[in-house]
View 1 (cartoon, rainbow, N blue to C red):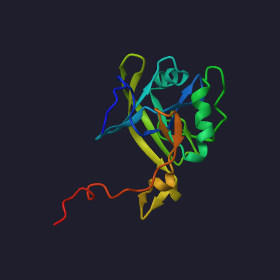
View 2: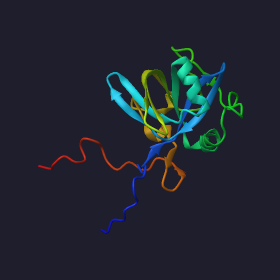
View 3: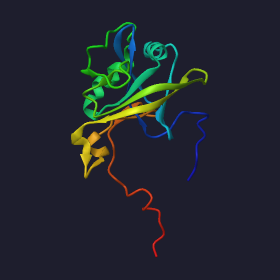
View 4: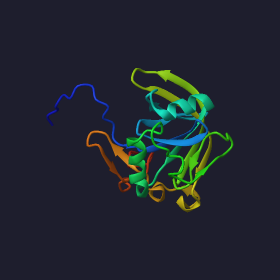
Length: 186
């Protein structure tokens, strides 16, 4: 297969479309981010890349906590809105029903089937973005997103962003069981 060189690009498929929540100037604010991923299992931690000029960034720095909210595909329009408009100019505090957990300063979105409540652990300067590492202090999952007592990603139905095409997608069909599909057959 012929390969075409594209130069250094941030093409990684897929990336989650998440809503980062933080209290900014006393109100909950939401920003869309796609550069987000698990950073550690012990302690459970997540990373998200945010430009320091973002309104939400100011809030999470002050409160030292934030949330990662995993929206379903049904929330695509609102997710896109939160990525287009800054909380510095648009009041997004009433866009979603909000709840708080243990940290009391990390707003979470009730309409999102999955929420991660995070305490700020690290803030690394990487150039255009800051890499925010948050320790996950609690995970909230809608009860109807469980199958056989386990989280079911098809029920979460997460919104996925594809950077190359600048489009949102849903989760595809299951390909096989991890740590089993690649085992040698005897």
